[in-house]
Image (cartoon, rainbow, N blue to C red; front, side):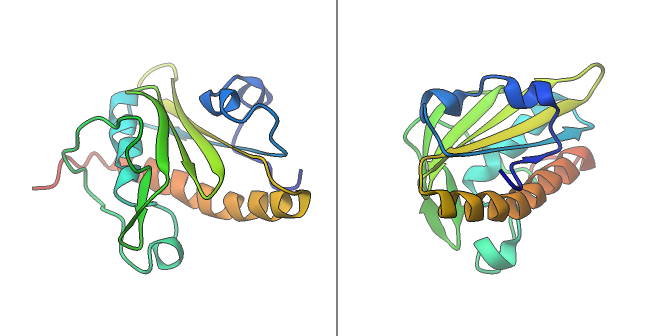
Length: 169
């Protein structure tokens, strides 16, 4: 499908993601990935902070409110809590989580899994897979829209994790 892959290898697209168990026969599948020059523990703290804001184009999906640019002390995510906050509203729901390894949530009918894969040295592959069961026209539009938004989100998370900024005061 047009726009279904960005920044992932064939092996990363073939691997099993937690969302695969939740939507067994999706007609929208999209894979995104980025290498982050930071250890998995640092990357995880930023991924877990998606609960506070979308971290993509704030002027579009957060009604102009800026996503936090410093880490905030948060408890680990838990199944059932809101997946993110956008425009001041809590959105979606966390469906599965393994702290430090993956966060899987549902929002607007799509199921997303963020997976952290340690690379050699001090880097992390941050992978995202999105799956959804919908009609083919919406699947194509959703895939292209997600490409724009998810790419920005992953690049923002990469920049923030690599910046070395600690918790907000």
